Image 1 (cartoon, rainbow, N blue to C red):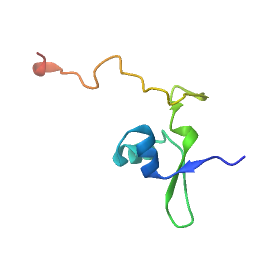
Image 2: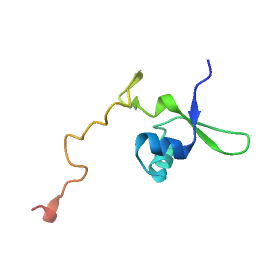
Image 3: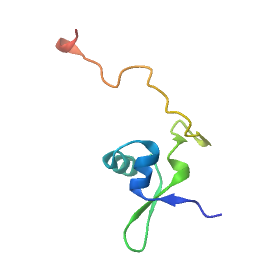
Image 4: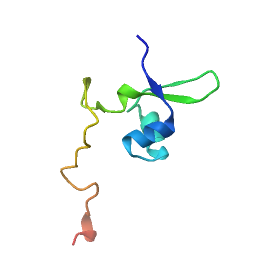
Length: 80
């Protein structure tokens, strides 16, 4: 069975992130991709919504989960 692939720009639109984020995910191994004979990158769609904690279970793209804590926290002398 052949897996469906999409372009980087289409992945950006589907997931709602920037191209830089997609490239970061590619380099860190969070999503799988293949290079075409012409050198383009194609992303496997099924890896865009993969649960990083459980690679065997796929998430549906219904709604992104909100983080439980802020993305950043002030520490040291910067605390309010």
